[in-house]
Length: 122
Image (cartoon, rainbow, N blue to C red; front, side):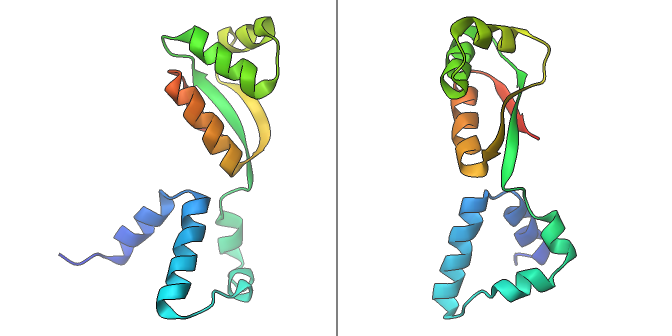
């Protein structure tokens, strides 16, 4: 069964920005071409649809191991223990950290998920 354009697009939508960057580099090397920045600029509307460079990390559910989640929140925000606890125990969803670069957000998200929390970007 052949891979369709839709399959490729779906796979690209699920990739992180760093993975997409690595893919572009691999394609450039394999086909001996250079991706031109002018093409991306000329695309117009596609630029508006591009993933944001910074996001807010939203805690949507603290999960069953709140103590572990509180520790991670304390670590990544620099808050004191009581403030981190209030944040986790408060009304959800709540922004844990805002204006975070995607790479840092992915690392924080992984820590929170490992601690048992549910997280999304906004």
